[in-house]
Length: 419
Image (cartoon, rainbow, N blue to C red; front, side, top):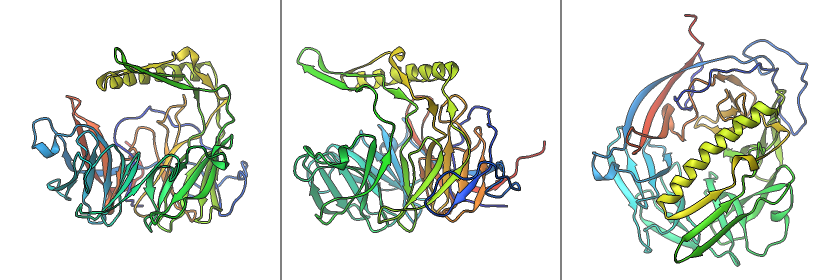
């Protein structure tokens, strides 16, 4: 029975598993595999092998009536370190809460302020496996030791140093993400592309790693904003185009990226020199966008629009979005929604659902071509963070809408029961 250390969240998914065509792995840069291939179940070129995930609850933190440290305002990210400590970034409180493997408080890191070790306008907090911190802001990057002690600050400027937007770090500590310097007119702004950079932390220049693909632009989808003393900040956003190919990537243990940016089923393995060292492909055809898919997407847009207006009102920002009728559509629904890499270097490839939503099945593969199986849409879902020993953390809310973090352990993956 295969065992894993990472998985997908346990909230329910639509009861749908689309027909699956054969699977081909190309361990080199290449095009789509042979769609006519067929193989035995449990092999890379065979049909889905559906698995049930066996999990056990570990702990849950976060409560309106608990201790002060677990009364979270807004949990934006969670990370595990190699000692199975969980680092919870509360961007409303501007600090990181560190809890041990049993859910008890170890310490808090940061706090609102502008001094060394304090957080000011933080956008992301990246935690290394050794527990060290890279704390990202619009105008600075702060480096902290695992105990929270301040190391140094890197100042950012839109014109000189540029802005860095990163959620991941390579094993050597360099950041991976998007970089832009005001006024630049090079490959970063090239139409039909999305550049990914490596950002060193030694004051050297960022380097372009890979240019991801995107659909050519249609009409400009501009966001406009205005401010007056009477009305405050007002922002208007265009409805945009649905079913753009998702760009998502994660870091493998050898420093390569596992990345998706295509309409079809294609996971690219990107080396540290920017080359495509391999592709994992499956001949699952994208869905043509029909009237039913468009209406389902408009309804999802309406629900998201309502939530955005509510969040905007909370921060005294009036956010107005163009109505669902202004939504435009690509011709096809991309096959893939996202991916994550677990602590055992397995790649969890999330497929879209039947109406273009993000609730499809999840394939689990390894970079060297081993197929482990597929989680069904109503099975375990990808967590917000993976940890050692099968730990998985999910950012959720309780019945009072108070943020919580639930930690479970993946024990095994089993064939479904015949009952």
